[in-house]
Image (cartoon, rainbow, N blue to C red; front, top):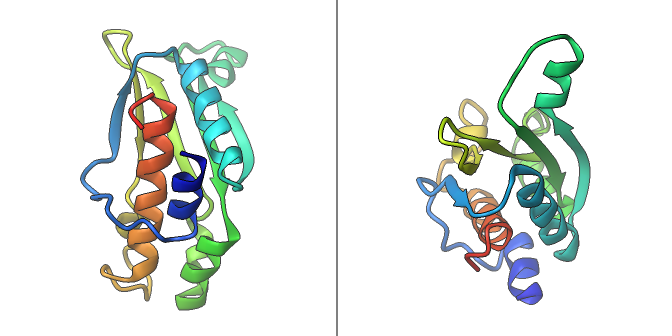
Length: 147
């Protein structure tokens, strides 16, 4: 499985469809982000930040459902996008959000690469888009145990 994830990250897997940008997780938000972080690092990518939105809200006297964001990337993919349009650096690295919905179920969601790059000089059918979507699909599937 590690090989498959790594292949997706370097662009050998292009089978993910952009409309599949949300998955239900049987785990808690924290456990889901833990699993995603393990999948990301196991595939050789870099985790840049992990943000606990609910804790941030609590620190200012506000209340949010459990929600955590993982920010991660791989220069092998990000550089491909930035070679086409350096402004891709405005939306990279990639981000995936895990949150508890109104029923308390953990959802995992992200923005498809073609939406991230909308308005940039990166064609919607560019190979890098398929590669990023493939990586996001593979990593999130691993995080929710649907590999």
